[in-house]
Picture 1 (cartoon, chains in turn brown, green):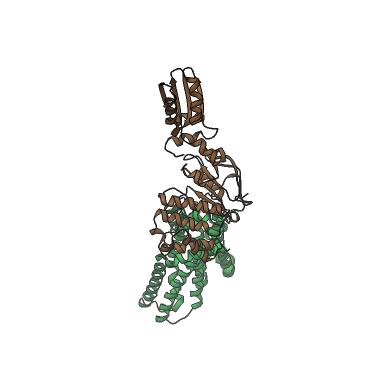
Picture 2: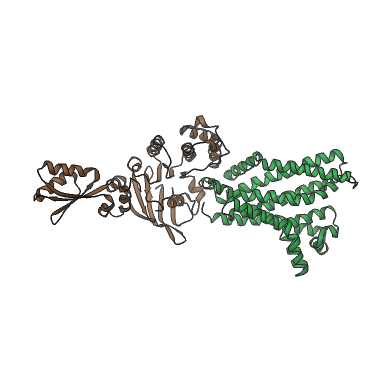
Length: 310
Length: 272
């Protein structure tokens, strides 16, 4: 087990940032931590790295972060949400300095700068780099020493499409090399392509931890259709289930159908094609359909309906 | 240890690149030279390094604490303001190692600046005066280095306890004002007029590293009771020159160690 978090708690005055969060991450796996702003993602990430005092226990490769943070951080490559480096140092000086801090040879610093495509900017001052380039430098520094666990705090923030694709590739490469990645994100569309598991945080509590496939299925935008048909309701139910799956329930003369948002038009097409006349219909989008989401994923489904963010 | 040395090296290199220390060295050397020349032209008589050393005491007691406090106060608060503190502490590095590495780097840098300032001044004075009392001159360089270490330690404590660099600098300047300017007027006046027991006089001396170094410097030059002042006179008469020097040197060392230890204890308990 590369990472084990047990009953992590953090309180800021009266505000609970982490409320008994526990999970494990195995070697070679990628875990995405998702949740709304203020859900506790960054607090959890910083606690794992040992940048924040907390109650509970975090073991990185078996080393207790609270008791021996220095040794634990040897196993961690960390990328902050907005990585900050000394602006009066060049890219290469920065990488060399952090390599020295990790006890890694200077050649490794050069390799890391090359790996993130910054070799042409190696002699440039950090203060002259764009946000995207600083992010790359952050990834270069995180790679030095080949840590078995990468901890990335909102790594896609501020990146353009190309850089985000490169980031996905970086994560895939680490997984392929048997390394683990813990990342926080509010971009739900990044989850299926990058992570094996998802941990959902809501007000500091872990409300869901499971395979990303289950998360993606549950958090896809959903709609609820209310249909009033012309007396062919018993015929309509199997037709709807065949087309869109989901839940179909009968309430008086109305049928309610909960299905992925992009399937709702197909439901109407199938009914019309089956010779069933639709007398009336109403559509509710995921905001209200969230009640139908599996336990723990309501906040994510709500947020998905509000623009793909959580 | 590797991490501490890396931080030490970076701090030292930053200091060398910084215009602060170069400006300090040059200013110090020029003022020292001017003092030596004024003494000669004013008919005081050229008495080499001894006279120059005496005239440098007050200059040094003003400038070295200011420089050291400001640099110390910027050490951690500056990293916090730039957002680089989290980046540093996310590495295999303990908070204590970071603090000690920074302190040592700054200490050696300030020592270098003090020695460069005194060295240039000494060289220029030697060109116009016969070289005598070089030992006193070197001893005062050493005392200045000790004072710098103590004030850096206090500065680092201020830095750790402050939310940002501007607050840390404000507290550092206030501390400088109290220890260098205000202390003689109020603390010593209080000790003499309100509670003039031996313990209070001793505490008044030891509670201020600037005063401790001033008395040490005077003791090493000429233990004249008028020059020593009330606190120095008390120490001299009570303990004798050797024990007084030992007690004062111990106080300066304690000022270099205790605030730094406190800073490390506070820093370890903070979130990055």
